[in-house]
Image (cartoon, rainbow, N blue to C red; front, side, top):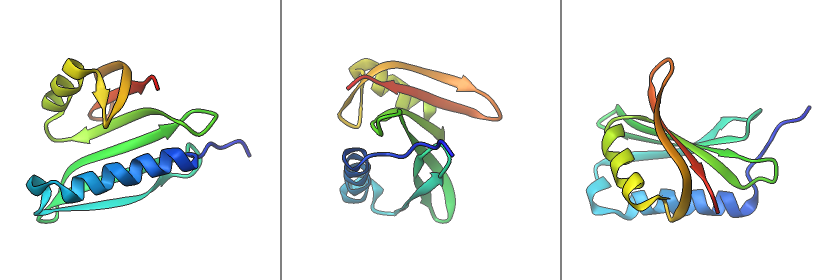
Length: 115
């Protein structure tokens, strides 16, 4: 077996992102779930819903050392998320190397980090 996992620093970063969502007043009516999304690829999810309806799914993928290498975002407001991150080239306080909106089964924001 050769699967990846996020290291302790990466999990700490994701926990801080989750807490940031929870503490932000605009998200007071939203539910935020944090869970292992894909054990084989080491992906961790932050799922945001409101009134039982899906809003966004943020997936954090590790590189071979366990650092967060990329983030995928599915759901609402992809263009707005793209615009905000593209203008600052930052995602949750981490520098972005490359960002794009991709289409597959459904459109998603594809973010590669450089920290």
